[in-house]
Structure formats: C-alpha cells, structure tokens
Image (cartoon, rainbow, N blue to C red; front, side):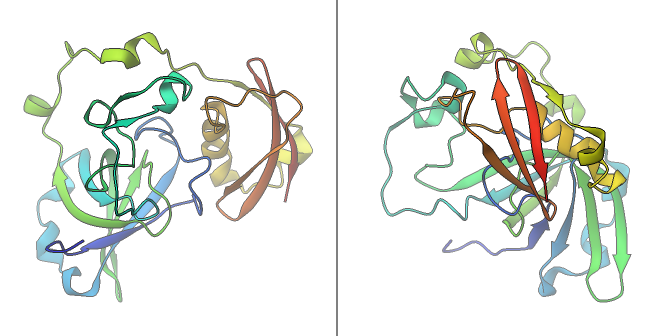
Length: 224
C-alpha cells in the first residue's frame, strides 16, 4: 500500500484462507513466527518488547485487494444472510484492506540471518501475510471488560466436538495436534454451509485434512 512499508511477514501454519480462525486468540495452540524484512532486522527495534505478554499486529488483507468497496457486507457471524455496515464488521473487504490482531508473545528468538524473530500464539493470519506495524498491548488501557459486542453478542461462538481416529491423529506431529484440533473445533466452514454429506478439505501446516460436519460433531475422514 502506498505510503506504508512492510516491516515483517508472518510464517503461520495456514497456507490458505480456508480454516483460519475468524478472530485472533481463538486458537491459542496455533503458533506462528514473525520474521522482519531485511531493513528492520535490528535487535534494538524490539528492545523492551520481551516484557509484554501480548502485542498488536497491524497487517494487510493481501489476498483481498480490490479497486472497489461496498458500504455493507455480509458478516459470516450472521451466516452470510444479513448485511451490516462495513465499519461495524471486521470484514476483509474494506476501503483500506488493513487487519488488526492481538496475539500472545511467547518469545523473541535471535537468528543469525533473520535477526530478532517473534514467536507468537493465537494469530489469525495466513502464511506470508505482510505486517505494517507491531505495538505492545497495554492492559491498563486496551482491556475493557465492560465492552458490548453489538450484533456479535447474539451470535454465540459454539465449538464443535471433533472426532478423529487415533491412527489418523498419529499422522500429525505431536506439536501440531492441539492446534489442529482447535482449528477444527472452531468450525472452518463458511457459516452459510450446513450440508452433513459434504466433505471439506483443510490445509494446515503441510497436512491435508478431510472432514465432515453433522450437527455439532466434526468427523475427520482423512489426513495426508
């Protein structure tokens, strides 16, 4: 985007949009790494950041770049059946395709070639997403327990029960299992799709996972 510099890119287990948690923090087991671009691989640029538990990421909806925009969108939270004002939603289809995510900062690693690398949890960004800025999360001003969630309060976030045969689960490396199960429990399907006979495919951390959903139960059929 004109006037903005890409300072970093995220390396996440999500190679495509389908299956990415709809909001940051929903799947804390999903870890990612933030790798700075060459001009910003400076240890002093993150001095003091290690003292914060969470950070804000300001990033680009790089897979949803358009020349036009609409004043209303169909939020998946409402099943794609109702229109809301674009500024009342977190839809990626915006006049400026900018996303905002709060993630947990696990560690700042030091790499000989990449410089400081931020290891984070709970990110909702596709692999390779460009990041414009990083800011610390400040609990005394950023946390608002009394906040009201508008129309989202009436659309409860219900998690699915995930059923997967032990032999299929064993095909996933142990460090990735909880994250995958968390992603599946959040129901990767578009909200308007509810066909119990349809087989869906999810790409996650190098694996292809086939599944079906019937009611509140997601059943994994295949892992490759």
